[in-house]
Every structure is written in C-alpha cells, then in structure tokens.
Length: 297
Length: 295
Image 1 (cartoon, each protein chain N blue to C red):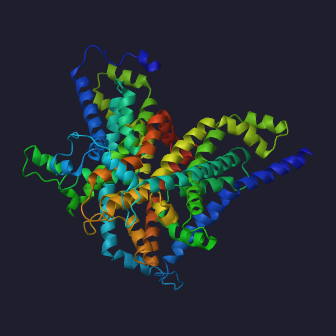
Image 2: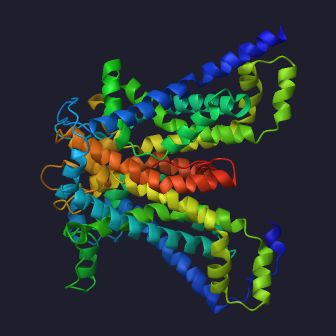
Image 3: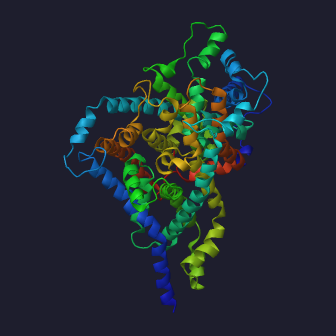
C-alpha cells in the first residue's frame, strides 16, 4: 500500500515536471537548434534546406549594418557597464556610511529600474530633443552657442543610449552592492580605521576585493542586458540617425520580420548566443562551485 | 541594528566636511535620478504653446490635464485614435493570466526539483538556468512557426504561453531555492503520514511559500508589464500591450509632435510598475536579489 503510494508520488513528480521538460526540450533546445540550422541554409522569406555551411556568417561579417551594430554595442557595452558599475558602487558605498533618509535615497536611485526601456527611452528622447529639450534650456539661460544635439549626431547618438541606460540600471547595481556591503564585517572597518588608513583606501583595497561576488553578479546581469539591448534603441532612436545606433538584437528583428532574410538573421542570432555563453559560462562555473547554482545571489 | 552600537559612525551633531560632501553628492545624484520623472510630469501638464516657448524644467503656468485626457482616450496609433487605454486594457488582459500561469508552473517545477529530484532533475535545472540568459532573438522565429502550427499565433493565449515559457527559469529558481532551504524533516514527516506529491505541495509547501509568491508576483507583474518585444511579436494586432501602443503613439505621429500627450502616455504606461515599486518597498529589492530580472 505504502509502496504503491510512493510509486504514485514518483509518477506525480514526473507529471509535474512535464511542462518544464517540454519547454526545456522543445522550446529551448529545439528552437536553438532550429535557429542554428536555418543559419546554415540559404533561407530568405521562408526557411529552406539548402545547406551552405558557414556562408551566411561570411556574409554577415561583411555586412555594414551588422558591423556597425557590433561596434555600437561594444562602445555602448563598455561605457554603460563601467559607468553603471561605478555609479552603482559609489552610491551604495556612500549610503552605507549610515546616512539619514537612507531608504528615501535607495528608493530614488532604484525606481528607474522598475520602468520599461520604452518609457526610459521616450523620456530621455524628449529631454535630449535637439530643439526643445536641454539644448533650448542652455540657450535660454544664456549659452547661445551651446549644443546638445547628440540625438541627431551619428557620432554621438550612442552616448545618449548610454546615459539613458545608466540612469535605468545604476539602482540595480546599487542594490546588489548594498547587499554585499551589508555582509562586510564592521570589525574590518574598525581595524582599518585604527590603523589610520584613509576611507578611500579601505574601500578600494579592502572592501572592493571582498565584494567580488557582488561585482560578478552585477557584471553578468549588465552584460546580458547589453547583448539584449533592443527596446531602448527602438524607443529612443529607432537605430538612427542612419544606422548610427543600430544594435545586434534589432538587426536580427529587422532581418527576420521586415527584410525577409531568415538565414542572415539567424546567423546573427547565433552569434549573439555564442557571445552570451562566453560571458555566462565562466561565471556560472565559478558560482556553481562556490554555492549551489543560482542566477543571482 | 547591531551596527548602531559600533563606534565608527561619526557623531551626527558635528558635521565634518566629508560628511557634507557625502550628502551633497547623494542629493545631486538624487536630483539627476528624479529629473526625468519631473520633466515628464511638468511636460504632460503644459499646453504645446508653453512647451515651445518655455523651458523644459519650468513648472507649468496653468497646469492642465488636457494632455492626459487625450493620451488616455484619443491619441492616435496610425489610423486609430482610441488613446492608450486600449493598450492598458490589453496589458491587463495579458498580465493577469500570464502572471498566474507562470507562477503556477514555476512553483510546481521548483517544488518537484527541490524535494523529489526525479531522474534528470539536475540537467533540467541547469538547462533552465542557462536559458535564462539567452537573448529572445535566438528563440523567436522557431516559436513563431510552432505557434502558427498550433494555431495560437497572434492571440492572447499565444502571448500568455510565451510569458509562461520565458518566466519559467526565474520562477523555477525562485521557488526551488525557497523550498531547498526548508528543513527536509518537514517533508519526511508528511511522507510518513502518507501524504503524496500534490497533497504535500498544496497543504504544506504552498502555505510556507507565501513570501516567495509575493516576490514572484512583483517580479512577474513588472517584467510582463514592461515587456515590449514579446508582445510585439506574439500578441497580435488586436492584443498589443501598452508598451507597444505607447511606442506606436509616440513614433508614428503625423505632423507636429505633441510632447505633452506623449509624456502623459509615457507616464500612464509607467504607472503600474511605479505603483508596484513604491508599494512593495523592500520586497522589490528582494525580488532582484532572488532572481535575475529579465529586461
């Protein structure tokens, strides 16, 4: 009797996992392999099975739009990550000096993260509007020659995306860092202060090394959001002016749904996949060894 | 709490130069973070004439809700001028079943993975965790094909299924980590009493998972409300969520842009996640700590 119930429960466990199993196998693994396969064919509007090896990847490597997307993403990624990590850490470190109204500051720094990239992009596009935005404000207060028209300058537009994204994500970094800082033993601070070390040296040489787990988590979260960058570009600039703010995720979407070149789009998507794995795999390995597996701790 | 008793904090009465600098930096940063919200708000309350002549930071001379009204009920996307309320209602219709479905599947999966560990459980969990990081672009085309084969392309059911699929890794992680931390004796005692898989789940585990359910709701409500790309591809023209409608309203304007209406529509779209954020307080941070928020 008890044994039958045990077997019954084992079956129930398998049944309960069926949806997840189906999603993992069919949707995740299946779609990934399908995408990979299409990228090896000559598919245009519709998928076909004409195998051409890695030719699409060669085409991709000489596609100006794709190359521009990659350069844009690299510039965006480096600036955004450095800025967001710096600002986020700095805010967390300052808040950790037991300031008053701590929770008010925390709320203010984190609220942008609750909003969508579309909202973020539209808000910043309006503020950076070259005729009525901050530029007009500068003119009105007397700087007649001041220019802040980055939104329409091909050589500067990518920085506007960085500004908006840093505004959006710094609070997230702050929250992660603050959790890490709260785990740093106060005794370390006291001992270092007794030794007469200045505050900044304690932060840089003692605290930051202790927070490497928090930095790694924040780094991976930011890095994956960089690769995924899409909504923000659509809302703020729609890739323009010209192709000056095109990004890989948008390249894939455009070639899938508007330009009807499935093979090229999937080759680009596969390239994105490989990039993400290259970022996540080392961290995952490290995290997995340290504690039980977790996407963010 | 215990930190209060520690001596390294400076005495509050004597403000040192460093302390003043610290507050100055924090206040200036706070102003930077608040500026976009402030600008959106004042812009939405001004008439267009005032926006053209005045400056972007100025308070409205005579605040008016006219722009809010037209954003809500008469702003145009292409040829249709029904305002953003259409998108709001669509987003609600997408949100409620998607949040429920994704949390249910995630809770059951997390529970099965934590206490029962059937064969292949480790591999399944690892697969889910890796997939949490993969960009949607890798899955989108095959999914579109599968969905049209199954007859759920461009439908409410389709977008709910998609949100359940892409919510699964985070939700599973959340519940699995919660259940793993519970004492195994609890589970063993229930087994000895003869309770089976579902009875243990419903009568013992779910009541103990209330805090994590709250975290899951916060994560999913903000995540699904803020989604753009999935709604754009899978919801279909009739069910476009608010974010997509907002982008259409702002980016397909014919003739002169009405910034006040644009900003009112933008604020309306931000209202739900902002309300969740400010009402949930520390729970939101817990959500971030517990699982990577997809973005």
